[in-house]
Image 1 (cartoon, rainbow, N blue to C red):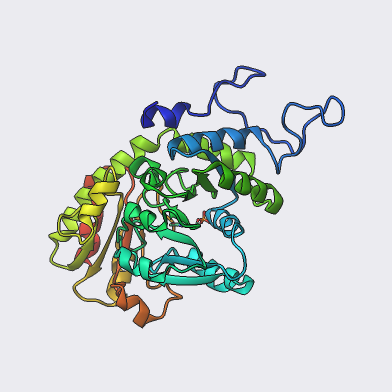
Image 2 (cartoon, protein in one colour):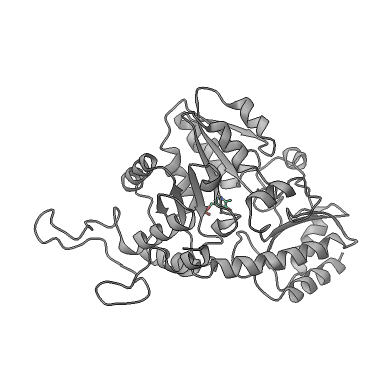
Length: 381
Ligand SMILES: *Cc1c(COP(=O)(O)O)cnc(C)c1O
């Protein structure tokens, strides 16, 4: 089955009890048993819920995985993955990681003995140098947030071959429509389905998709034993969102390309970060592993001040000033004062995250309105 058919049909079939074409929301905590232990495969809803099962089958198909597991949020999914590890194990992670993932590693997992190394993964050599016998997990995020660096998933996965070493890719920014990391050698994929998979900014949910049956077994055990599962209503919303994933992401990518081009030619703009540009340092890697270049665009201003960035952010009318990304509506954000405020200024500047850096999540509105909105906001400077 091709991807555009899978989003709509994989794992989904009419409800056996009524013929309902759309997967029902099974809002129940428990299931009747005929006699003790004799049941229809469902005992208790932390362990099994039919709405969740359909979403998990669908996600496994989209990422070409063996099985998928859903969680209450992307970070709950990450937390459960970390429970595959033991105290003393080492993890190598991207150095410009999603802020919440970074916080989880340094504030929580460090207390339980996991050792984190944050490296610039745009050069696989930096990863190779860090691998030792204690290394048990490599955590890739690509494209990265908000600098839109691209990491070569295949090159890094090859470093883990023939070692007892898992590779997990946070595929939130690309979505499985643009990139399928398991096909490139990764063992696990993580999604914040809150973003492109849900796609309508109306639900928080996380997912892990697993390539190997033995790891799937462990993840299934942990999902039930730890219990950070999503409710059936949220599973339903993500299932509904996924049905239009390909159409939404297609349009958003096209819009993003035009917005990036507009910004690049603007006299008030200094740098535009977008992997679709031929002169982007990782354009070739992006071309190799992604179907299109995504719908996130970051840029900074000629006059690099907080004040000027805030003036732009406050002047847009179509772009909404908000955290998050991946919805049908375009969002605008200021990483230095919002998502990345906790990172010291010198650290930020080292990776190019300047005071005036602005991040856009491009939606599926008419692109002329998006460009006009930015044009008007930049005139305010
Ligand atoms: C939002 C996000 C997460 C965390 O997901 P939640 O659903 O908010 O818990 C993880 N990784 C990336 C790249 C994200 O954008």
